[in-house]
Image (spheres, rainbow, N blue to C red):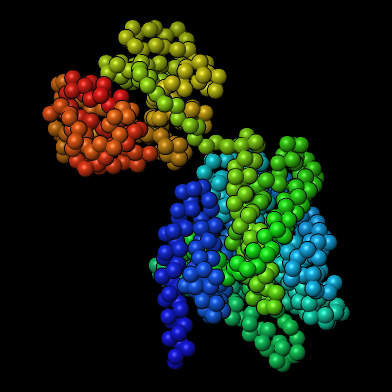
Length: 640
């Protein structure tokens, strides 16, 4: 009973540490470091070598958390492998995977074996032991990080053949490395026990794989059954976590009964079982979307627990003595990946540029690689801690260096479609309207009345100039970057597109990627294209719903709507950018504003703030102001 309460106290304390770890680790992201690094650092500080919040004796009692996390990480890795998404680039993916998997594994294992005299805990082993550790290191070095790759792809809006290939390879390798680990782990067990290779060993190895596949199939069907239940998502997520943990319990039972009744070391790899089961659910059931949603919602919590506990397990004594060999191993991995990428790219017929930069997207490591490290550490208690510490140091280096290299490679491949840096606009306010029609002319006329300079770009010829002051009709025969340069898009505040959705999207993407224009206003023709423009941060006007919404506001708030639309005589509503440094940091209530001026809201770094008297202004704030035209001009002069 006392032991039970001791475990409860340890778990409760660990949960409190996790809450703090998550909050503090978030600060690392603000200095452009991965969250994983922050969690590992927090684990190190909480561990027995610094603050001792997680004592040395508590770590083995928390091993079940590792098992739950590892199973779920395997589920996440398997769910990333969706066959239909890999077909378009299958040839490049196939050869690059072979290059990265086979070449990296063989070269790394060979080089590490030749350098075993430099590695503290290996140099005392015999040849069998050195081979065993070398192939385990080679396997771990093959693992990648799909989660990091996907996050950066989304951040850069990367798309193209290079992106499709490296994402497919990353996901596929993270799937195949579990198979490779199951094989090398079994071989390493035989080498380290010096029981030798014989026909019985190969029969047992084949039996282990067959049993693992059988259990994986049953687990996949069990997950399908759980997902089919007509209950809330939360109970399903808990059941999936528990099911993953049961795979580890089953693995221990197989080993226990194998040793007790048959005198055999019969080992089924839980990670292999979980990743195959997840693959089955993702590709051969109708519950893929719900399964991915559960993984997406739960994986951050799993990572917090897993990486914090990993950090607490790191031996700082080993780090102090083995940092040099960790750096050497890191460089070995980089070099072998370059050879693997060049070999695979050459076989796939990739360009010379893609062959030379092909290794850069694969440097990052995270969940699966750390999971494999913990499996080895738990199995080989003698040298496992030293092995884990060195490997984790290498993985942290990969996680620090990898993301910048991945971003760089996408840029070199010409597939970075992230938003360009916005040009600071001062003086005259400019707008470009794409498409010549009655609405564009009417809009240009209204903007001109508010001192905007407007260009109407059209592919039509022979158009009569409407003779509106400040409005210029420009012939623009095609949608291209060259045409945008001629229109002086760099110094334009707002782009308005009134053409077809396909043409509007092309204009918006070119502007977004090359100029980062402050405002994109799109007239939507078909509702199903809404998300494409929304991803670019465009202000979307859908004519049918806009009219209904406008009528609704006139019915419910006629005075406010009239005011906002500028229908009241001598009244207007405008956005003003704060550029006056003297006003930086001043609270709104301390401003000396005309009595008829009202500040409705403040936009700061893309976020809307409902203004109060206590809101302090910052340079670059966009203030929405309502008042008389004369007073607004006074405020504009003072603020800008």
